[in-house]
Amino acid sequence: MAGGLRDLSTDSALLSLNTATVRAQWSLRQAIEGCARHGIGAIGPWRDKLAECGIDEAAQLIAGHGLRVTGLCRGGTFPAADEAGRQAALDDNRRAVDEALAIGAECLVLVVGGLAPGSKDLGDARAQVRDGIGALLEHARSAAMPLAVEPLHPMYAADRACVNTMAQANDLCDDLGPGLGIAVDVYHVWWDPDLRRQIDRATGRILAFHVCDWLVPTRDLVTDRGMMGDGVIDIRRIRGWVEAAGYSGCCEVEIFSALDWWKRDADEVLATCIERHRTVV
Ligand code: ZN
Image (cartoon, rainbow, N blue to C red; front, side, top):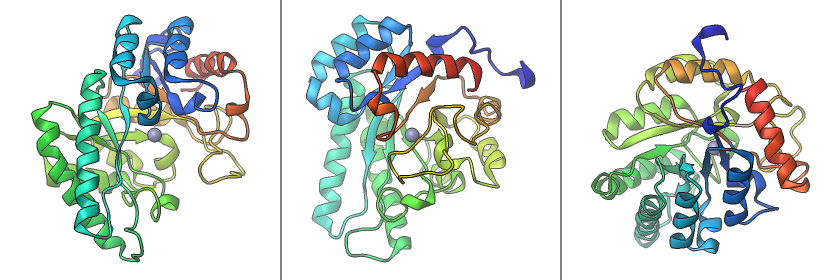
């Protein structure tokens, strides 16, 4: 294989299923059992599915099937209109750290939040994010749970995340220090002309690598992500950069697809993920 990439062609142990990929079809228990059945080595649960299953139950199921947990999705949503809102966000994020610890997650993924309600001040939102992560880091460090900031595509700056580039995520890591890293999701960063340099700058701090594809046209801003290979992202090239930056963890498939993959049989979805992981990731 070119560029010294790891050979994924036979190694589904290095594949992780983000539960969003089968959100419409499966509970967390079904997703865990599905991964085990298909030989997928890791899982990335969302907190709603985790709460539904029960944290102790989920921890037992995950351990019982020998799965890695590549990350818990998600903490974040720091900006708020007032101090009470900021405190509520911090409390919820501390609980998320504890949940990540309980299921043996390798990191807690942070989708940091957009503008505070009623605000047009993006600079203020970004300052609130920095302060919120700074406050959370104390608890996360004492729990030895790494936090992974996930930069989101700028189309989500208002309502989901005002950290939109790898450069911003790197700046946060430089500012806030140990215990903070980055989740690189190809869907959100593939367009960035500075991507290669910023991934290189992130050497040693990449904690997760999320894959799916960018469809042309994209019919829905949230729920029309593509299966790897069906869109325009050069996933393998980006994986090469990420691995050159020292990342040796799993490739986590995270596909929000109300129009396609959520309508299919979940076992077919997993089989397709495995095949595309071998051929295009
Ligand atoms: Zn992601």
